[in-house]
Image (cartoon, rainbow, N blue to C red; front, side, top):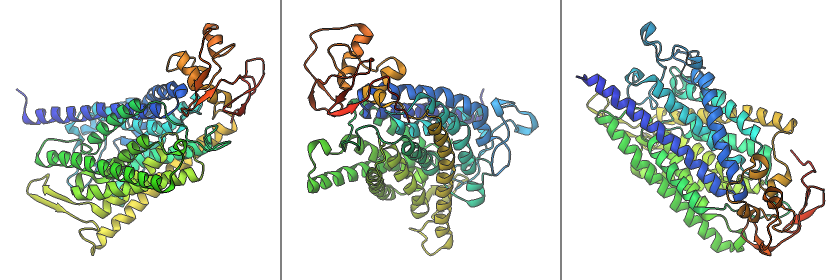
Length: 525
């Protein structure tokens, strides 16, 4: 018959396993938001990107990532054990085979990870690593070569993110243990990291052709239903991440914290989404832009909801519900500000990844010392009140010290990520392996990079504005087919007459009046 400790271990292990599976679905949700938010001729490229990142990040995290993050040694900089899972989970040296992890919030007691299976712990934290990498790479959509995703994934999963995870959450990590910074659900460590990486990569890639030059038009995504399904999965993941980062659910205190995190996540996301939608409609009523210049309100509202959930993540289990509403409201303003700012500087982020995760993550890490309050049943019994925050203890120096800790965390995350991503993309640009050719971008990356479009070839040709009569993509692939329509629909949804495009012999044509080069003319960045 199982003992109480064995039952508790089984419950906690299953709780962490369940959370890891949901985080994987959350990554799939981000992929659906991206694929639905880009043009149909590039949707398959976004899906294939996630597959590549899953493969490469798993191997990179197994070889070096987990060892750097949770190497089971009291080192403030990095872990030094469990390379390629060596001696992982062994019970020699008095439990030395178990990872070194501190309580994510450090607000109660330091828990003993031996209560859970170490392999499940590895699985859960790999899923976080996959999430960070996949979020950041979504900003590179519609113009990025395949090799970029591979190298970016290896660097993020095997080096950049694991160090940050160790510094905040690892045993004796210098941000969490020495400085005293707090980031419960990863506003800075997960989301700000992804946002900064997305921004740096997007700057190096430059805008998609036609986004700002020779015209300034939004390049609308092709499927609201796909985006909406992705948003549901992402929200599902936030419910887990923002409530279960203690890795525990048994006991009155931990069960209460899980419920607390769930409610705050819902309220912050709802407040942020409502605020953005109302503000955007007011802006449009004043400026009255032409129909084709209006923002993609559905995708941006989804992103605002995500920004609210990102912002509340830093202390989701330690906020009063009214604080979550305020945090969500400010998150919407932060997202809107970053979105407008990036557009002003002609930074082309197809699904606004950088604006969402920098805007929400940066605000979220500073919200912790302002609103944090934990009141309820104590983990060790009794009644606990921990309200060292500016709102509740404004006269105490310890409350204001939290702002300095948050500033330190934000600066470290942004600098550490920016340095290594800049080096990677600079090298890739110098060796001309960064961006697809203009022809491939205009005619669709799916077919010319992967050889298989996400949709039927006829739909693919219509979406990219390719000629549907004569020697075209379809002719080259399956032979000539007569009786095609005399008009096609371009990527912005406008009905345009067929133009005659280039064949492989070098003659030139145009798309929507814009001259393009033939396929045999190289135009790579």
